[in-house]
Structure formats: C-alpha cells, structure tokens
Image (tube, rainbow, N blue to C red; front, side, top):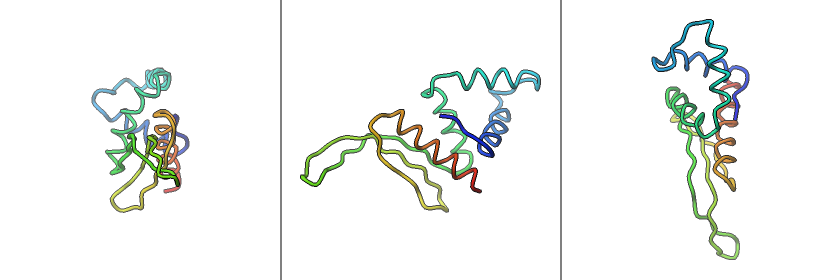
Length: 113
C-alpha cells in the first residue's frame, strides 16, 4: 500500500502541513521511512484523512452478495468516490486487499489529474 508519483508527492506535502506531523526539514526523510514501515492498517487511517482533505471518500466494508443460485456470501467492498466524479469500486476477499485496491485506485486518479 504505497502511493507513487504525483500522488505520493501530494500526500507527503499534505502530511507535513498537519500540526501533528510537523518536523524539521532534515528529519523528514527519517520520519517518512518510519511512516512507510508502519503496518498498512495504521497507514490506512492517515490515507483516509488525506483523501478526505481532497474531497475523496475511501470506504471499505463487509457486504453481502448473492451468486446466480441465490447463495449468500460476504465479501469486503471497497470504493473511492468524489462528489463531482463517478465512483469506483470492487470486491475483495480480505480487508487488506480491499484497502490496497482503494489506495491503488486513489493513486491512479491523483496521478492522472
């Protein structure tokens, strides 16, 4: 779960603008290294805050689906949406896969802007 290109640059710029993440310039590389070494589940909350600041909604939740035989199964649903844009979504088997898919889609959207 890592951003790339323009999305990564925008995220890191935003991160250090937040009062809780302020640090001196010469410590930013070390701080980022520590952030990116955190478990993905801990990074997820920060990515959600960043997405919120740009008007994007990142969402991951359990959803019940039915197959062609009307059998019920639960899968993790992910979505990325913005008020003035069409949303993107999909299903995954694990929460981590769903988080990764949502971050990857947000990364793609930001890099294509």
